[in-house]
Amino acid sequence: MSNATAISLHQISKVFKLYSRPVDRLKEIFISKKNYAKAFWALQDVSLEILKGQTWGIVGRNGAGKSTLLKIITGTLQPTSGTIAVNGRIAALLELGSGFNPEFTGSQNIFFNGRILGLSQSEIEARFDAIAAFANIGNFLNQPVKTYSSGMRARLAFAVASSLDPDILIVDEVLAVGDAAFKRKCFARMETIREQGCTILFVSHSTATVVELCDHAVLIDAGTRLLTADTKTVTNYYQRLIYAPADQVQAIRNEIQQIDASGTVSILPTAPAPAVTPTLPTQGPPPQSNTRTEDYFDPNLKPQSTVAYAPNGAKITNPRILNMAGEQVNILQSRQTYEYHYDVLITQPATKVRCGMLIKTVKGIELGGMTTHRLPEEGLEHVYPGMCLKAKFQFRTLLNPGTYFINAGVSGWVSDKREHLHRILDVIMFRIEPQTERTITGLVDFSLGTSGHINIAQN
Image (cartoon, rainbow, N blue to C red; front, side):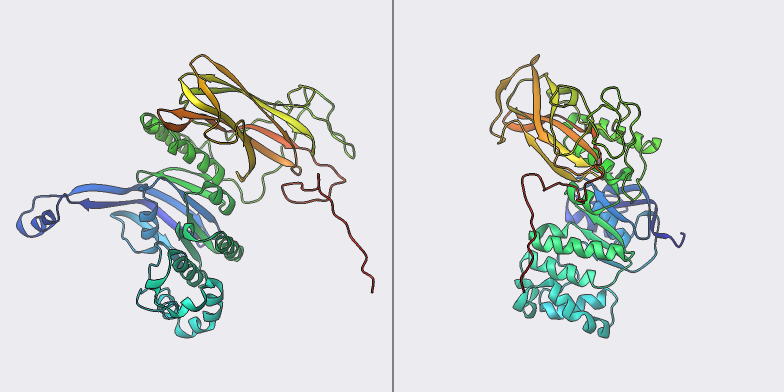
């Protein structure tokens, strides 16, 4: 393993023995050589290389093998086969309150857990006040941990682990129990230690959080590594997998594995993606420097990250953005009004049908969207095979210059359950042209409809 590598996994597999009855385990050990157990492969031939300073998201359905993989990385479990190499000190939050003695107070557990994680007594004493301040649980710090809520245990556990100045920080979904303010504080801490060169492994079912926090991601399903790529690509395919009808899951798994093996997806650099330079437009004038650009359509501005769910009673076709003159465009102006259209062919009966759209950044951060009907219980009362729906959304580009993507989706009630009838991620790519006189940074432009002013204070 090179010095630039933090974690290297080569064909890691882990099998557990499952017994129908507890007595079968004793029979196998003491009475006969017969195998009473059923083998369960939690992981199969998982290979992965993570470089120092990278932030990785690990996604997958419940029972996919994510936690088993992390326990092997931390040394809590040993693999059945394969090799693993870890370069650096690990701080891990694998299970809520792991490493805590429930009979000890919070203060005592700071020292207890800190020693387990490799800190000396003097090091813990030097960091104690900062840990207590970050956890912010008040007088409960002097009460037994068994009296803590799950959120308080998460606060204390994260405060201890993140205070280690670790080379590798592993967080396995434990932050899901925290309140919004504490989650933001935890993410800010993770961003800080990432900037200091720490490698981070983050497991979460929240794809938006994975996209926001991580640079790279891996999709694990049924113990198998299906896909390794940038977070946007991985989370798109993960969502397609978890929302797939049961009879199509295996086909989608096979498709994702083929994409990964073919190398058609790659890990994106951590730097922002470069803007797409348009070729000769098919309508409207080309942009000129120092002048206001006009809408136009660039045929080469096409998304390469489109992921379509399996049709489940409907089929979305012909997505497009139109300006108010009715022209199809994908090079837009800030603060202008546009319409997003797509057609929906109904193939199975459904009720309460509604359509939606969502705008995302290049990294996949969800900026906002809308639906044709406000509530899930609302929508078109009945649709039938052969019907064609026309979805239309009007929006204003209150976004700063950059490249963006739009999703399309249609859902409805089928057999007393609301389901995605069809959904396509990153179906359209568009760009908002820069304006040289603009000085506002960020993603969203709040200047329209608002005002700012400055007064001169009189001494």
